[in-house]
Amino acid sequence: MFPTDLPGVTLQSYEDMGVKAIKRGSIFMDDVEIPEDYLVGKEGAGFIMGMQGFDVSRILLALEAIAPAMVSLEETIEYTKQRNAFGRPLASFEGVCFPIVEHVSLLEAVRLLCYKGLWLRDQGQSSTKVAGMIKWMAPRFATNALRDCILLHGHPGYTDEFPFEQRLRDIISIEIADGTSQVSKLVAMRELFGREYLPYSYRHK
Image (cartoon, rainbow, N blue to C red; front, side, top):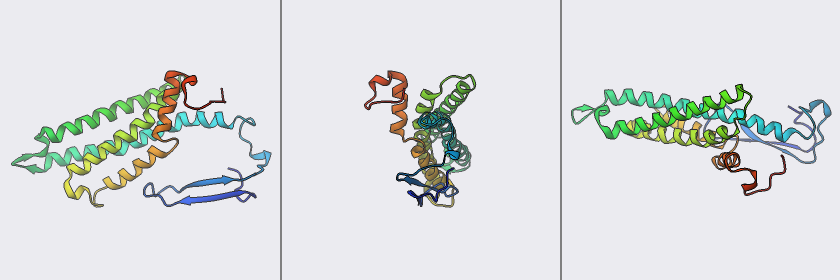
């Protein structure tokens, strides 16, 4: 990290609604001259290095979104086994079980795709396409799962007595981090269709 007290450097922090353990913010640089001692890699190669880093971080963020959703689904399964309605457990109703089955199926599939992306990197192959796909899929499917977990717990699930609201807020932040869903789809689009079909000019070959 370069010194943040250099002339032209401005820092701004955000009071996020979730992920309270992490402080997020922005760094603004106006005609800042960075000492050569702080150069990382070759001069002019920073963009490429950053993009390559996203191929890893997006996979890890996807896994970070999946984990709380899976835990919430496991807790909801146990709850529906214990809670009775009309003389039998909620877990015996298809309207209760089928949504949970769908969420677990989708999240398990995305988790396996995450593992494929990490495997590709271990093999020295590109994980860009996979990272782009799972980065929009994981938080989308995870937030959908959390929503149903809250509903299946009834009004108590909507209170802060349960951890669902905190998990939901945290997962939403992952959809923004390291490229929104729209950016992630552009990445996957570039890998599937080719750079020449991108809606913007791409100067870095």
